[in-house]
Image 1 (tube, rainbow, N blue to C red):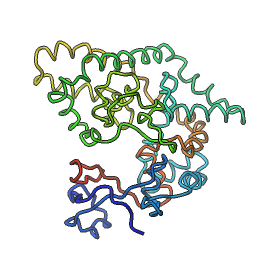
Image 2 (image 1 turned 90 degrees about the vertical axis):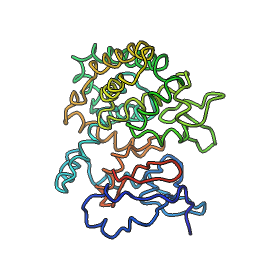
Image 3 (image 1 turned 60 degrees about the vertical axis):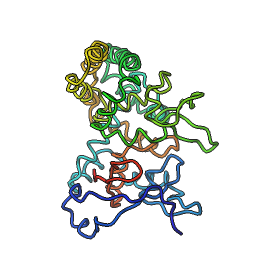
Length: 346
């Protein structure tokens, strides 16, 4: 059965490929196309190991169960580290460990999106079932940073408020936001839907459990300018997308400072409040290193269960780790150009 083509006339940029012998068998002079995957929340798994179903979509019926089967072979986080180190891909372990720590820390800061909530709920359930007291260890490690965490939560709220008031405005579109989106690799995302869809057909803002606000635009880029709080997560993702490891605003702030020379005097005047609040938030960051490897090892069983939940959307680093652990070949590309364009191997 032939899969439904999503985009065609794409070309792989040969210079972006590694020197792995595999790529010598790929004819990069030929155009490529992408296939549609099933959109039930496990699209990353469908894309990697799915097969074309009756609807022409790539689909793996037991996608979440497959995650459990892979991770069942690694009951401890240290087992994952040993496996990755032996294969020279220790960075895959590091990125996921950092992501786990960041999910936990974000929850303690009051971030309540689906991924953070699911992990926190599972940690609590396992604490009750096994008496492991993982939360006690987490809050014990952060006890000296309690005021720090509260200050960061307030600083983040002030950044988002200032971002709506001073930065994410239509008049900044051509001079600031579009150039920055090109630097951040966000240009393509601007044209993507700002929502994910449940099986009942209802739409929710991507990365959240917020229902689509009435009368809102459909694309990611257009919704950045919508001042309603439901779209704060999209704005936050824009500002932190250039920091794939710790998801902080420091790098974004530096990019914005570099663009000051091209700003008008009125833009600079309006932007100073936003830039200052970005600086305060960056200084208030709680480092993921506050959670020791021992604490993360305690979180690992809950994290394994969370990954198998239908409401959890995989990050690319999580997909990379799963494929490394399952010995499944994987290459991730980003597209430059809207309906047609270049594929850059990450």
